[in-house]
Length: 308
Image 1 (cartoon, rainbow, N blue to C red):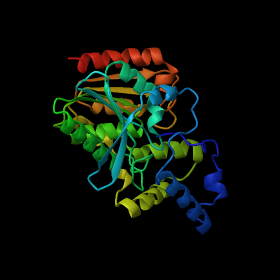
Image 2: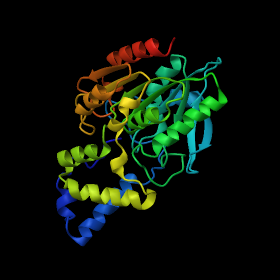
Image 3: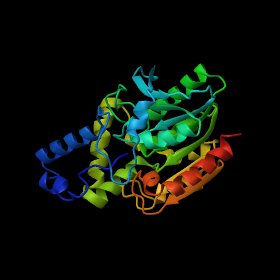
Image 4: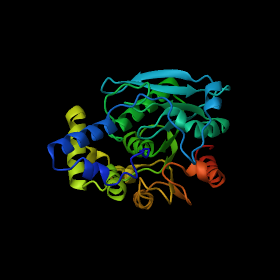
């Protein structure tokens, strides 16, 4: 999930548009619809504190890979195979209104560690089909399809998952669903415990939009097109079912997904687990703000659980 440029316009959405008026409700529903409808952009503006490796990514000549989700949606991913054959795979999941190349910096690091990489565009993003973003509810089923695809093409596959924000929440939901998959470990960077609480936190902190109205309107918009309620996006309900080792990472200055959610998820997880706090890091910026600490912990975790 990425922060939007409306952060500091605190009263304009609720006040100027006028909650309670027909015009106000119509305009705000248009805003909410725009938030959850598909995002076709491949590249967006860079974020301060975030690192990118666009040139490196393009130089690898990534392959295009397609599969179909369980509901028939055609999904796309970029594949970066190692030059030498390997059974060690890393799947990287981007966040809400994110894009594959946003993870190019992390992808380069994992590639240099020897992982065969797969970077899916989440449904309703980039080259993947889909009309609506569902905050992990359908996305985690798509993730299971990608895991199955790797296993079908390489029965000896050893898979590690990496996700950021919505991609991290999707990873947790997928791990609980795909219990029989050969998942060695997973790294989840700033996942949310409950997506509705994330929206409540963000809106109350920055936009001052009444929570009750937002909960009703957002669910109404998403449900009309997907028959799914955002209240179902709750990794906290399944994290204790995960068996694969988990590394939780969170910046202590995250103003979108509350930092406290890492501790909540970590405490409920019963699998082998570790956690890392990155000081002074905002949402999804931990790897760029303190790369030395970030990669020291990530590399140690991966060598402990995936280089067996």
